Image 1 (cartoon, rainbow, N blue to C red):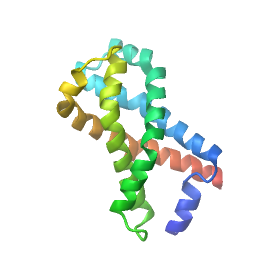
Image 2 (image 1 turned 60 degrees about the vertical axis):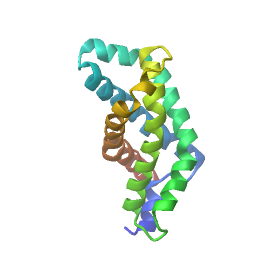
Image 3 (image 1 turned 180 degrees about the horizontal axis):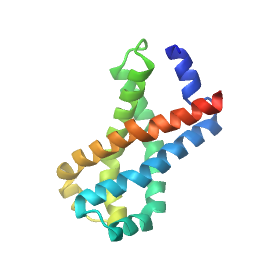
Image 4 (image 1 turned 90 degrees about the vertical axis):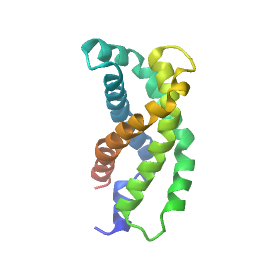
Length: 159
């Protein structure tokens, strides 16, 4: 399959497909990333998992808002890094990298506020300790699970 066919078959074409694509990615991400990050911070336990589940709806809304907020800047950054002739796979990995970079900066702070159920300066004071780990976890989940699954679903739908 050529790169042009991959873009056509594996990415959303219509607004409804775009919504489904974002829904798949955000639901996978919000159910995995905070659990791993929180588990790495305070230890993996059933109580920790329950605490994460309690804030998941609010966290999901924050993730969707952050996706919408960072979509255009991430696309612009991707276009600055890549040439129009770069492959589909290069475009997907660099776009994921740029999106996760921007989103992780925001969600390292906002996610901590939501998870801790309070707004404080703590995530800002510890930003450079928290962000690299959060970015790495989010990038791994996005690049290896969420985005490939969403592209596979869209590809199957287009077939």
